[in-house]
Amino acid sequence: MKKIVALFLAVLMLTTAFAAMAEETRTLVMATNASFPPYEFYNDNGEIVGIDAEIAGAIAAYLGYGFQIDDMDFGAIINAVDSGKADFGLAGMTVTEERLEQVDFSDSYATGVQVVIVKEDSTITTVDDIFADGIIVGVQESTTGDIYITDDFDAAGLPADNVQRYPNGNEAVLALSTGKIDCVVIDNEPAKAYVAANPGLKILETEYVIEDYAACFKKGNEELLEQFNAALKALTEDGTIPAIIEKYIPSDVEDAAE
Ligand code: GLN
Image (cartoon, rainbow, N blue to C red):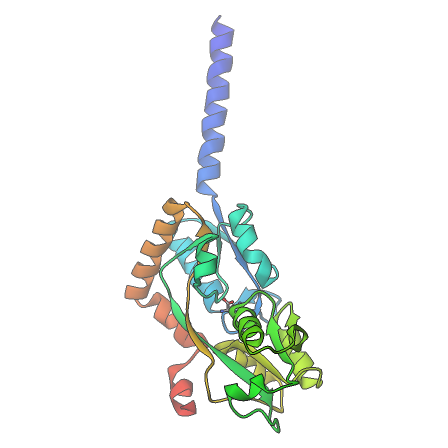
């Protein structure tokens, strides 16, 4: 009998120890598409860095969790979160009604603007020009740029084939540079980074759509969502998050460009 009690106690102690270890080392997994500078991209050391990567790292540290980033196609992020493969998605992701049916969103931490990238000598000079017959628009698959352009082309009676979808912004911009498409619709900050890195391109001054970025969570995962929002608020108020944003999007450069 004593032996059984001892065995039982040993098992109980081990279980408790393992539970405590699991608790201590809980790692938050962030799903993203690391081809979206300055929000998430690979630096020269092969690490994923950027505004989202650093904000999430700061939030995980604030909450006492470990932190890991999983890079995937943008269109796979919501599924990864929904299936529990990732704890949240942070990817310059716009809050939309449709996405709200699949996931919950945190408070917003940034604003995005859909803009149009063209070649410097393009005949496209305003957003309206992309609805001219025969214009081929490149988008990142499953992003709001894809959704809006697809809808607007459909409404305008333009052929569906005139919207070309790419797995990320890099490939869309490459297709533009090599003359396969006439323009790329993408968020403004990555657009600036791509134009800076690829000579011969420019961003149209007219903006297409303005939107809010937030982190997405599995529906009903309120505990983590609330912790995330509380950390987001605290780290915004103490200046941590503004400093991260300033590091990647310096306001003096912004002002000079305007
Ligand atoms: N903001 C856009 C969206 O949510 C694009 C995001 C991205 O490509 N990472 O669809």
